[in-house]
Length: 290
Image 1 (cartoon, rainbow, N blue to C red):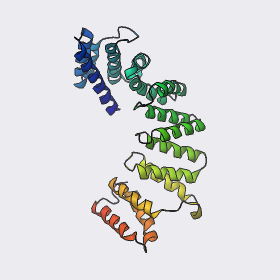
Image 2 (cartoon, rainbow, N blue to C red):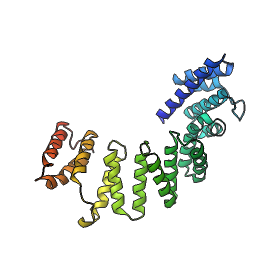
Image 3 (cartoon, rainbow, N blue to C red):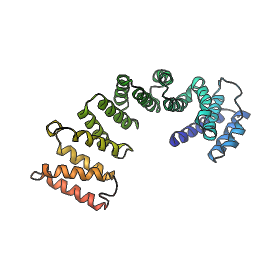
């Protein structure tokens, strides 16, 4: 959220400077500029006082729209999210240039309440009007998580598949993989769930859910008979080990070394395994971080 807030402030500054370059600023742009400066200094109460109450419920001009958005941000910072929802809703409904930024806060609040209807109401126009929004994939993930929580598993599967197919490089992808694995687990597909959890950890080893994903994957595989478990691909595992070492996933690194050692003992890949073991040992941290 901090990065989103900083990006929002940067957008407001850019819009404000552009507006000032196009003509003489009125008192309202001047107040907006002063409020932005105060917010950057951490003086949210003073910034709210400068910006004042909304003059109408329908921002129309660019300055009114930007002012409404800044007011919403300041209210959230000073009074909390719940107190700011109406202000964000006004931006969402009346000022398209910042509507998807406002929708992100509205979606987070709706997901906290498990308000599926509200999330769907946000997603439909966002998908149509803001298909390239940086926030749309994250809002879709909130929708999928809410669908899952409420037991709408088929709908959640469709939403997750859309996220992973349409936005494979977005930061929301690891969360979508985690949810896909949970859905596979709920459906009783334990091998698929184990593979998806492992894929999450292997692909995004520095993600906050990587350790949990590795743990869940191993738990599922341990419940299966040996012949039901997926075969280990030494080449893939050796490629992955470098990323795991870099991410300092030492518990998983040790497990991989243990599994790979007998598989590559007498083949050309053995020296590569030894080099990776030396790389891990040189970090002087094996076993120190889960």
